[in-house]
Image 1 (cartoon, rainbow, N blue to C red):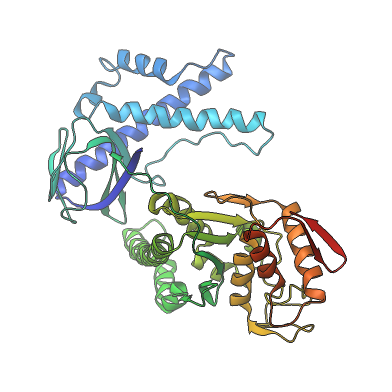
Image 2: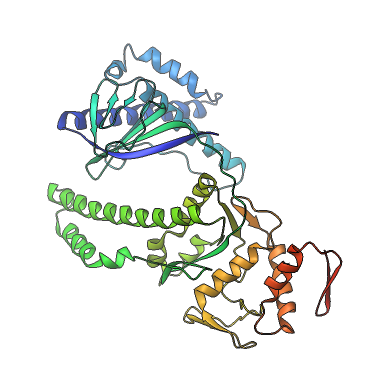
Length: 428
């Protein structure tokens, strides 16, 4: 299977190289704004929108007069600038047609836009400790041997963040497809107290990085507020604050990568819940803590790592009551609140940690799926059917046996016929 894989690392640039990269980012910003104004003028004049390839031809004609300075920079900078602008402009009209909230692309400014540009990878050559770029020449890499050599490079993106320059190399690679059988199903419940709790009883602690650096962040905020607005000292204080936020983001991403890679490599089927993170942010008491955990990033990492390592991801519908359902008898406890960290079942007397109980329910819920596929969603109708089945089965079952698991064992045995559970009759 042929895929495009990106390798991101930091560059070790000198002053001359940093100045040239800043100029390249300015050139890309200038072409982007020119292309956007070109399409807006066409739209206001009632003309049919030109494709970005036609706009490039118009730009080529102007390179001998208005844009003669473009010869100082790689030609592909203008190519990617207009291509990205065209994507945003088309999305604007597509959102209008679909009835979504649409906003026209904004012009990029030197003050508020990040220094960033993209070039073609044809003239780029990667070595162990450096990378050869067109016009600028050899640039040293801080990580030696990280980017593979002698591979086809599709594109290269260079950007600046907190006065540090980074490079992202998009390489075309041949990857062997891995097929894993669903031998080890595991449920993963995400939370604030513990970042992730698996149905095997493994807890991954939440580092709570914002709380850890809370005092230092307050100090830097105070320094920024006390500086004169628009002064050089204020810019220095803002840069120091931005560097700390970048450090926190790197630590958070490292922790998420470590956990998701371990799960994708060691488990065959991973079951998570489809969390409504945007709705969870409306709770102002927990919004800061929820943002620090990065639930959406956790899911995004699993979505691309599971196919890579041969495992499979199942996403359970968000309306499935994983926390309120007893993993022993299947009864739903509607009066469960966020303060209750221990789940106590009033029917069977079963007592278990709240997060572990949810992980066990997610694991049991996945067994109702007919097939396992990466990112597979289980519909609300299936959720209701599975929940009612567990409740009916748990009403007359013994405390020591989980009816959901018992039914799965019967179905998996391959025996056909009628299965009677309380007053309901299920045919398999």
